[in-house]
Length: 400
Image 1 (cartoon, rainbow, N blue to C red):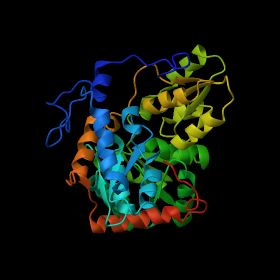
Image 2 (cartoon, rainbow, N blue to C red):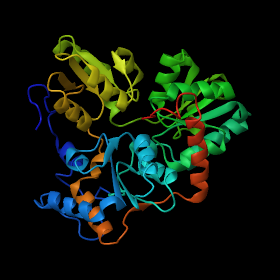
Image 3 (cartoon, rainbow, N blue to C red):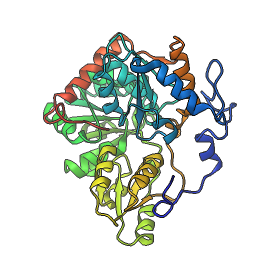
Image 4 (cartoon, rainbow, N blue to C red):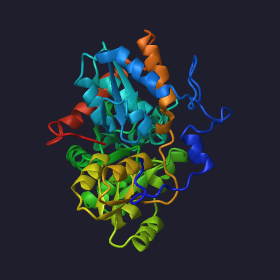
């Protein structure tokens, strides 16, 4: 039950209810139904059906639950965490025949890359994508790289790709001498890249790239330019390309990109002594105004260590903020924005889809399997291994 003394639910809107699965628009939505009989969300037997299917599968299934998932799904997760941590946990359980990833598509791809060929990764709803990952399509990225080649800049440019990207983009990074990063090791990844070359091509989150380059590496905003794949030549002149230290892809998180300077100011006015805690996927001006900035795992640890009675306004996905508020009734935990801000695609993984997937697996039917082709997996793994080889990264947890 939500602790109403410390957490105020943002006002629901028709769009928010749609994203939560309480309404549907089949004319415009992909994935609002699964092949076969998808149980309706109002089915009162869903929880019991999930329990029965889970018990029937036993150790053959390993259920991963991302931090942004809704509670009705998280209750069935064997482990919770960020995307890369969950993929690593799946790889650390090689006896599990089925990896049921309650997250989004790129996360399931990462799990397939890291797990063995004998394991099968299942995504309960194939429409659970990621808006940020979808902002960098492989054909667009390859066209952008051609521009570096034409200008003779490719050999001195190192791609650094955020974990929140498709397997194809990770493979592009591996083939072209680059590395992957998470939001907790982005600084190490960029430092490594600048040891290899004089310029970084950062994909696909412009905000994480800009915040890391400027606030952690000491570069200036002028050192960073924005490549827009929808404009000729990315919207950049030859001179801008040559002068740039960091070429940022024009992508962003639809959740974290919503937070503004205004909501930070409003939270400080509304809550005396509030601590502003945000994710580095937020806009540069928001991050500069925050008191604390860090990955999802950092946000969780910061709340765990906070003093009783302290006040916190958190700029990240609402499901996680609500869960943190419930876990810390001795602290005042508030969502940074007053309007609903769910990860819409993450919320496609609801209880009906999970029940449908588990019951099919229990019956011997593998549904919605995520498979990365051999060549893509090979080069994506090269990029991931470069990240894991960075000092202090491979031996440590590397959440996104």
